[in-house]
Image (cartoon, rainbow, N blue to C red; front, top):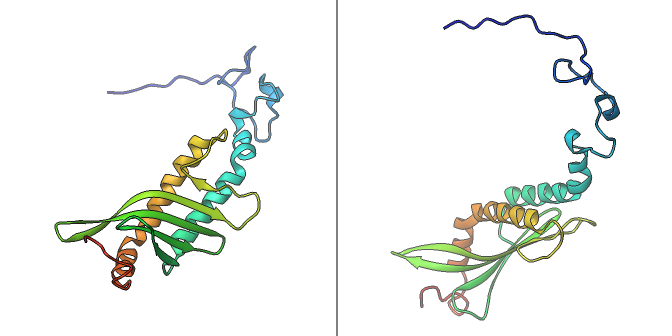
Length: 170
């Protein structure tokens, strides 16, 4: 099968459609786009979500670079723990159940929260009724998955707790 291409017109048309390539640094008005319609050029995303993305990147980096578990606290409910990991700019807390299945322990997350020490950074959690709560909840889920890369170390630390504090499977 053979495809033949004909000559491509580079002459401007009346409405400047896709036949003419825009030059670098072109102003939106030049192409018939209203100056307030910045969505096509992506600048509104940075304006709207800049601090959110910066906070997410800092939290994600802290979780990936964590070398040890900060603290493990037992809650009032059996086999439920709060695990904390602190980083350079954030503190993440996972509330999790420890489940014993077929002799194997695993974590079953219940809640997650990430708080930044940087001003203007968002708090990542499943709570919230802000305008961008759906994006924050999605990013919170991603951060929770990053937290769980430390699951083996967390389970080892829970096993090492004194018997009065660790009653897994009792």
